[in-house]
Each structure stands twice: as C-alpha cells, then as structure tokens.
Length: 409
Ligand code: 1AE
Image (cartoon, rainbow, N blue to C red; front, top):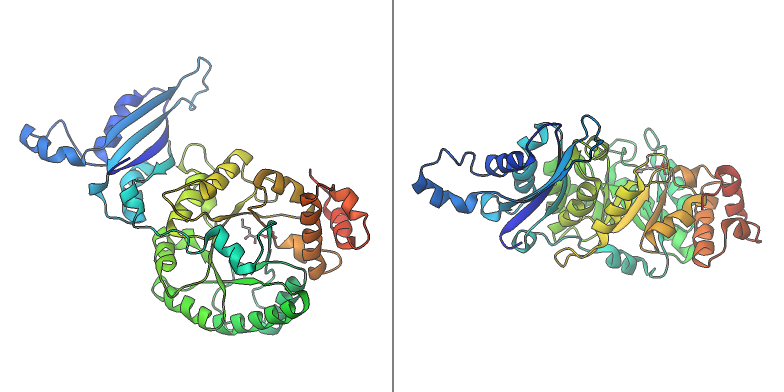
C-alpha cells in the first residue's frame, strides 16, 4: 500500500469489542490520543494516524474460554518511522507485544519502505550458481561436537563431511571465538580440507563459518573470515537483531552468502497467543534483512514446527516480495535420509536438506552419512522408493541409514 505498512494481528479476548480495541491500537501506536486533540491539531496530525483496515471476529457458538479472537489489520503511515526494521517493529509491535494476548501474524511493507532493503545478495539462484548445482536439492552438513576440540580434529571432521558429497558445511551455532579454533585459523584449516575433498569428489563446497563476537566487531570479523578464505557465513540473527543482518548483507565488502540460524526463535513464534508468526519471523523479515539461506525447524524431525507454519515460512522465502531475491529454505533438526521423500514432497527441489546427527551418527562413518543422503535424494528425484534404492548395489550407505532410522514417506 502506498506510503503505508500494514500489520496483521490476532487478538484474543473473551469479552472485548474488537473494533474498539483495533481503533485504540491504531491511535495508541501512532498519534497517542485523538479525541482529546483540539480540531486544529487534528488536521496536522491526521497524516500520522494509524488506520484500521479490517476486523474479522472469530466467534463460533461453541468457542472455548480464552479462545475468542479477531484478526485485525492496521495501516501505519511510513512517515512515522525511519527506513529500518527496528523502527518498524517497535512501531507496530513494541509496547503492544506486552499488552495481553496478541500475536503479530504478518507485515506488508510499502514499496518505499522496501526500497531501503536490497535483500539477499545471492539468494537461492546465486547460491546454486556458486556451487554449479541447478537440478537437485542441496545437501548441508553441520559440524558436531565442536566445543573443546582442536583445529586438527575439526579439519578431520570437515574433510569427512566433504567427502560424503555435501554442498555446504556449516559451523555449529554454538561455536564461538575460542583459543582452540580461532576464526581465521579455522577457516584456513577447513578451506584446506575443502580443496582436498574437491580434488577427490570434483564437487564445490561452501563453508558457512559462524560469525560471532560483539556487534561492533562483526563486520570486521566477517572481512577477516573472507580474507582467510571463507566463502559463506552463518549468523545467529535473532540474538543480534535483524538490523545487524541488514547491515552485514548490505555491506559490499561482505560478498559471500549468509545463512541465518533460527536460535532464539522458539521464544517468539510457537505460542498461538503471543509473539510473532514463524512465517514473518523466519520468512519475510529474514529475507528483507538479507539472508541467503534460512534454517528453521522442520515438521519431521526432532525440533518440530507444525507443517502449516513450516510451509508458510517456505512461501515467505520464495513468494514475490518487492522484487527481492528468494532465500533458500533449510528445514532442519533431527533430519535423516529416511525423511528425504517427505522433505522433497513438501519443498520440491528448491530446498537445502540439512543434517548434523543424521550425517555424523551414520554407522559407517561421517562420509557414508553424506552419501546416504545423496543416495536418498537421487532415488527420490528418480521416483524410486528408498526401500528399493537401498537394495541396489552401491547404495549400502542408504541401506545402513534406513536400518538405523527407518523411512517416513
Ligand atoms: C533448527 C536448527 C538445527 C541445527 O542447527 C542443528 O544443529 C541440527 O542438528 P541435528 O541435525 O538435529 O543433529
């Protein structure tokens, strides 16, 4: 909407007049008070006033106590806030987020607001181009057991992951700056392992090193990592804030893809009554802020997000959004090869299959863990059931994975 950002809320209240409530939000989050203003002032303040667009009350006869709700849409004039996400979020859901049972479901920003956001620098297609892989889902592996391990151990782990045919390897999000595996040394060691593995497999690989430290040092740390050879970054966006991601992704010298980790998201999206919807939190806002890949819990594995919400995140990352590049969806946590048919059914080929334990925990070793996933992906793309594929010669890694974790189709 021209000059307006539109917020959609779900407000719960057993007795409220939701129309009155919507009006009090629209006024309270913009001009503060309206009825008390003198007529002369009303004229000059009107352009700042929030506007209630829609109030849809959900009121079935058998509604349970505490579950009566309304979906409310309010338009906020762009002139009230600067062109940055903190200003927008504080306007539409700052104080309001603490005012009873209310959840922010969606935000439609104006063309003018969106023009301040270049979005993902590489996006889904750009990541595919860097890897030279266009016809299949990508496979990402996660470093595991990282705290207290030294460089030699990490390099060995990296090499084994790379030999398994993965396209990306990401640091564990809990690996911070530490004396055993400091950032630049870690990048050098891992990229050396990547080159050795590429010489054997012929496959390119992106290593998303965890970008950590105080906010004021992040850009410098990113440049150091890139200088040392890093070709991707992992970033715990919600612990720092979207604006930090926006700054990093808009920086021309940080010319590698950024993968957004969802750490802390569980404090914000799972409640039906409070917080921010998963599709906005991990979808639209991550993409606006410039994430090239976005990790989020899948509906299939160990940290579960309901399927409907999961597909809404997917859509927010892939649907047209002010001409921004799309971001790669990375449904994660507890993923093993037996889940590949489900993942591909829900996400198609534009998805990154991502696993830690499902690769490192393979009974034939880490490299076989990656191979099992690649075999599962190939079989699924060719319309072959995992059970049939597992019995084929050459697919022993897949067979062992299925024996350990089973199949969900
Ligand atoms: C939702 C984030 C998943 C993640 O970061 C992670 O480390 C998953 O590990 P696994 O695959 O569950 O072992």
